[in-house]
Length: 209
Image 1 (cartoon, helix red, strand yellow):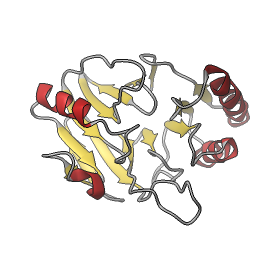
Image 2 (cartoon, rainbow, N blue to C red):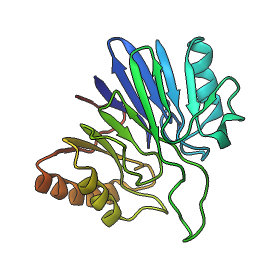
Image 3 (tube, rainbow, N blue to C red):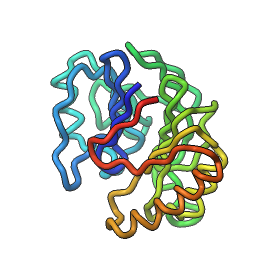
């Protein structure tokens, strides 16, 4: 599978010519056109993960696409399916196992919204805005590195607890290039301890697993 980083927490996964898109948004850069998309996963309702216009565009260009999101967000996307922790879904080219329930707290004791993570083909874990543990061992972990709910030490501990073969930096748009460098240096040190591959991909860069 080929995994391509989109902006912020956006992800494009290719498997045998079929594509899956997670959380496509346009914050500073315009996204490319997407073709042969079989599934879209929107982890939660926040605007840095869910852009209704982009989702509608992908759906119109891929009439058979399946869209999966939280119960809370499903009403915002006509034709989408609500998924919860433990749900298993097969879409052409992709086996999806959903996990988690809540967005990580920004203010202690308060849950900002529902959040759903996904394991793709038993190999790639995208937790959305959470540090929820994937339900199985994975090869590649999307590690959130910044946010009002995220501390670097939490990213490090999450990386260690999941212990994948590889990880990529995620949820990074709110950092300056200098800030990204600091966070990524800490995660690279963790990767060295784990004997894992860690990459801070830029928009359009890919990793093969």
